[in-house]
Amino acid sequence: MNKILIIDDDSAICELIKINLELLGYNCIYSTDPVRGFALVKQEMPSLVILDVMMGKVSGYDIAQKIRQTKGISSTPIIMLTALGELNNKLEGFHSGVDDYMVKPFEIEELKARVLALLNRTGQEIPSLRVKEILSKGDITLIPESYSVQINDKTTQLTPIEFDILNVLMQHEGSMVSSKQLLKEVWGYDDDNDIDTIRVHITHLRAKIDKISTSKNKYIKTIYGGGYRLLANGSEK
Image 1: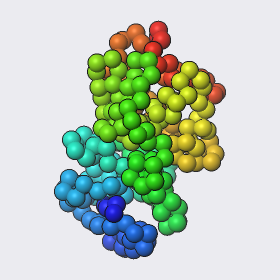
Image 2: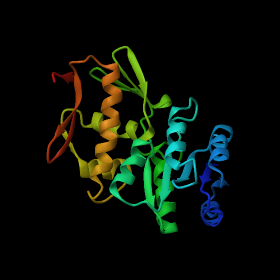
Image 3: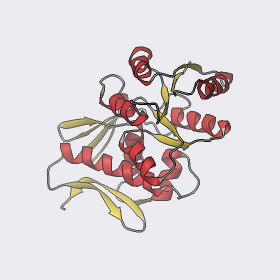
Image 4: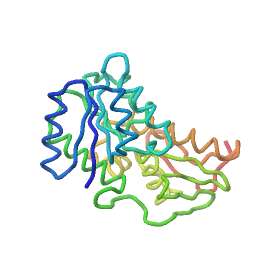
């Protein structure tokens, strides 16, 4: 049974989410204290964290960054809930390492759908994009067991979303994958109204790949006005 941890200083919201997700068969726990919440992530090793932003001195952004920087829990999927709905707030959330972002007030049915979709994508429910075996093309090797990518002899860990983006690009290696297609295959969205989400994650993915590749090789090319193309053997700048 998947365990979901809710971290929100509003106990009423925690109870609402807990009750509805438990009706779907999930095991839910929550904390209204962000510091204790982070400790619970390390202690309980949840399948997914639902995280508020504004929680006093310790923000949800801080907690998300700590999760991403902590060995053993760094790949934990995170959905961020917040009343801050401006683009810069969303970008800050994605820069902190969250996988999905919902603005309060939210519809509980949409949250349930996003929880299921994120667990699907990270291989914890019915398998979707997650590859079963090591996938190699050109210089690049994806290792699903550790959410990592290897280029030549160097390896770096990815978030589940970064892993899925790279997986999709590798499946279409050499061909353009549109932003709309990435949103559909990775996030399950039917439109292209959230292109900034793609841009932020591609930026992070490129930065990680650049650290383990030669300085002259570039693997993900932007097709302006179209999408992205993976070149598995790299290309000159």
